[in-house]
Image (cartoon, rainbow, N blue to C red; front, side):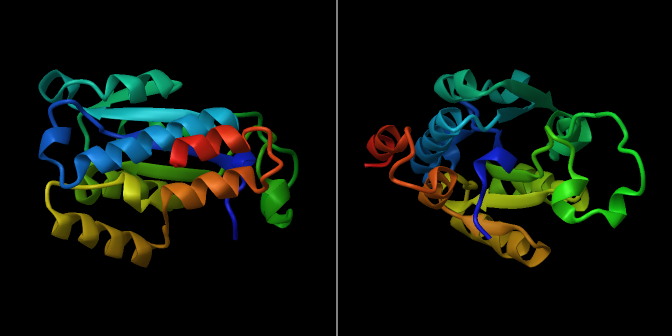
Length: 197
């Protein structure tokens, strides 16, 4: 199954000023998060940010924060516990009849985007707990591995193992970008290509 931009939302978890200097390959993870956010803007995918205890860890990278529709300040490690789920799945009008009897593509509301594409730090704490909660809330979760990290490589990799076992799809920045565009004839193709070269 390929990602469909019209069904996706991008969640960027805790790329905070005081946290990033101690993150393993943090500069690379942040650069890929910026690329993701730029491509999301090109294809009209909503972009949400989170910040863990920003009074102590500072705000997100300013460029990344500017690309987000909204940023959620949180104290829980999982952003879902602080209301992220309501941002991703706004409450709409109830559908008439028994929605479960409808085919899956008809069960979602007209504005619903059931795929959550996640990237962030620390992969084994805030990203992991947010992703697992979104899976529990029946989102299709895709984790962008080259835009995620932790203070140690081992913690990052353990998070990826656990996420894959829980049903998250593990992808890369370029996989997401090319799947969102689908064709070299997409109007944003050249602009996206310049971002990833």
